[in-house]
Image (tube, rainbow, N blue to C red):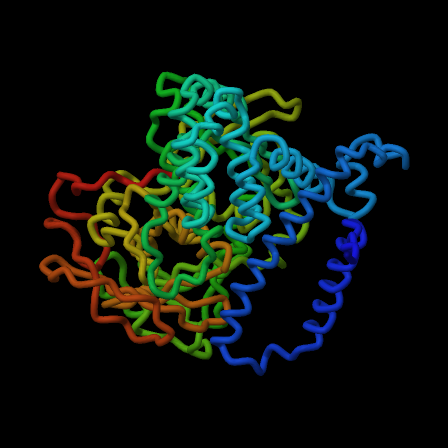
Length: 534
């Protein structure tokens, strides 16, 4: 009788891996771009099964290396360190591979067989290791013939990793509820938030327990809402804007430290000279306008204002028409609210600072000053305080109510944010040179679009029937109609690229002022609250 040939396992393993490498090298030469989609889809599924089987083989090999023990003779202090030397993997990846190999060998034999057969993935195995092997009670439950490892592996074969994770989490809580409670308490203790200052802002990093993280995500989602048409921001950018909005709501509501002498808020310190330079830099530049004696900025006159808040001769809104009109007078423009700044005027001017003495750029100062309460402090030559003025806002309560009654929501094209989530945007130079702010030169914007208008130096023109938004190159961004009492509610229009106003808009509340911007005749405020300032 002929003797059967005995195949050495090491030889078979090396030969099989060699054949696999040869096959992979041959497949690398195939031009997959010319293959039909059906064949590509079938290949993708087959490759996933191969990848799983390779992961199972790797786990078995590492488990054998671990049991052999000779990996330590080469100087490696731990098996993950040896894996790093052999594979060049990241330390966390090497540790995960070793942890998987040991768990499959010691407590998850059914999962090891399913992974080797390609029925489940290494990600399914990772879920089992994290949630089913972390306490003695759960390891013991794995041996249960009905609700143990065999049950979980059978579920894994038919579920994607996300759904399988939820199933195993339920299994883990039912198996060891006391451990689940301890884990929840530990997660709360782990909660932390780092706000690290970096050039231009701060970097946020931290950890929240599941419930609190879910609550935060729900709040951000509710604040973000459905993005309007034309919103090109990424989801991450929208989440950042939502967080900023929630911060404003918390600070402006007055609920934080309500009994404090000064409620927590953003404080900016600047000199009078800086404010004067800022208003000069924000002045319109038109070849036809005149200069007030002693002023560094030109003051433009009204062109055809018919809204009752000021006629020709400088008592109404500015009428410069350098944006797209070649410098000629545009009688259709009742007011122009510009967020552009002349950097030449600001050269050499002292920067304003936050409370911790961090300097801020002039565009940000203009944005904050636009809706701030101003508190005057006069110092003597030796830094002694000579005078402390009372806090004042640029708009009276009646003016604010009138603007809300007229605009009703953020007027940026396509935005419906309510008044309580926004501020009044206006001309700083008008207040400096003409005295109290005229509501003709003011518009309601939400916090996000108020930031956007200043950051992008957007100019807003008021026409008899609509607002026109122009970028810093005088190219129209979009329009928003100015509604009057009795206008029926219609859907909001998305931002347009033409200069013509859309035919839709939200109506003001009953008793609101006409589109002229004059205050309402009644003393009762509208139903919405005045937008808070910065």
